[in-house]
Length: 417
Image (cartoon, rainbow, N blue to C red; front, side, top):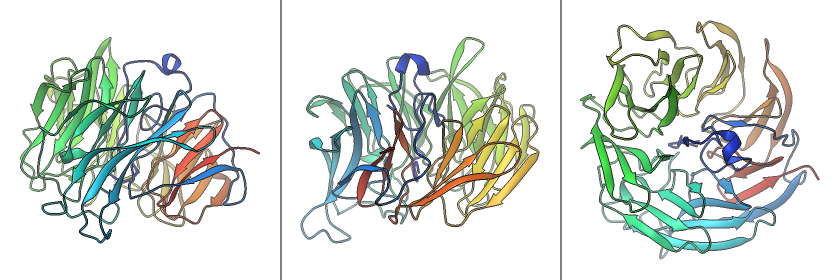
């Protein structure tokens, strides 16, 4: 899902070509779910096209990321008797992408049971997705803290627990890297602020309050980096508002107000517009032109749609087509320029993971571990349906022509054999 709360999606200021084939952030090189040049299998199962399966300790719905032949993810391992109120060891795990063997497994923080927030059934103490840049891996545990580790051995470069806030349902949104800044949101009941840390030291570079005063203030969004007429904007959605910020200073460029909270899906960008879903309780999907300044609620909303708007899965934009998968499995294709529905298809199961576009096909992952592959176009055309039989809320990662799938129990490498 981010998986849930994950959402979770990230965007570098680098181009996909510069990053290469690495899936080093949530939703890949562009942060929007596109795996250029990859052709993963369309058919798999517990005994088909599984190169390896590695059991994972603990619980976590952060999505896997891949860089330089290694896979990184976070997990929370219950301590003691492992009961529902156990202390948690918040850990980062590095695996070899070829063999699935664990290279290192280190504790970053501890979550004491006393005072820990109640975790939603679709959340975990380790839901935000890691990101990798060069020899550094950045990990985020929401209100519990943020850290930078050395990719070679997991040793801590810096760690901070300065930015505590009062979460609801646990943590969720992932950070992004823009230049020298690691940017993420802290949307709790006590404060709703977008924050940038210096990626080298972990010190706060800037903080920008949302100033929205929502009735329900908590959200789990992941920012999106876009470039508009040569100028970068960080798009950050929260309860009742989406903001565009200058990544260097945190200064607000524009905002649009709406009604929604517990915002999870990460926005996407194209056709001169940002596309996003407003979260709970009744999501509305927005298309917003990005060339405004100030409060542009009345002037820059190009269109809205309600049918099929997701609460958890991020949208997928392919040219002038938007693909949305709702929590209940309604798959909808919209014209990205007008918002007009092109087609919809009811899929079985519930959905939290975000879709991936690879090899000219779209890959979906249901919460029961069913992977559906379809061909984008003017009508729904299913290519395959595959069942792993394990709960899955994290989103796919792509490594070359392989899919990396995280389930409640294990990590899989799916590759043609």
